[in-house]
Every structure is written in structure tokens, then in C-alpha cells.
Image (cartoon, rainbow, N blue to C red; front, side, top):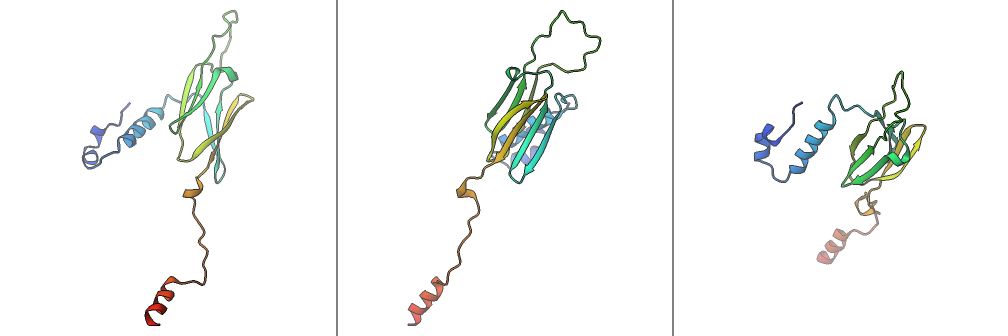
Length: 156
């Protein structure tokens, strides 16, 4: 596998300052998207304009074996598999029960609303909550015109 480093983009890094986080994020994305990192499978759904859900297939895991954390904009879902009963001899073992770690980079102002486990699917619900001071403001148009008032003062 090839890792993306700042050495791969010398002309860009010579002229940019403060983009270390960008390169770290690109490196993390390339490392997470490797072909052998397909366990466990997951879905990302858009529920409406500001709501999302991440569903992770975690058959065989209990709530106690799963850990969902949000730190610095990264949603981390981890499963710690418990030892299976050694007294059971499986003729076929198709249900994956190995430990895993999945990370999802969340956009600004996206918050975790809740997480639930039902029928082997872990669903993490997300919502984008933009602070009121950053939302667009509707400006009321009035009949007052500051320029007209100044012109009248100068002329009058």
C-alpha cells in the first residue's frame, strides 16, 4: 500500500503553511480505505437535510462489547470480541466475531444524537446543528434609507 506523505506533494507543501491537519486527514483516509478493511460492513444514510445515520453490521456483538466515542470530530466505533466457547465445534463459522475499529470524520457542527443496537445493526444517528450566529439572517427591508437622509441634510 502506498502512503501519502508531504514528500509526495513537494510543490504544494513548499507554498502552504498550516495545512498539516489536511495532510494527516488525507493519510488517515487512504489508510482507512484499504481493500482489506471491509469488516464490518456499514451504510451511511441521509435521513433529511440535516440528519444522517450510520448503520454498522455487528452481528454477534452485545452492547457491552461495543464502544462508540466522538473525539475531535472523529466518530469511532469499536467492537471487542469476546472469546468463543471452546466446547463448541463449528462445522462452519460464517459470522465474523473479530475485534474491529471504524472511524468516520464528521463535518463541522455534526453531533451524535444517539446510538442503538437492534437485530445485529448498530445505528448511530447524527444531526447537523449550525449555531444561530452562523445561520443566514433575513434582513427586513424598511422605508428608511440612510443615504436619502444624508442627501436631504446636505441639500436642505
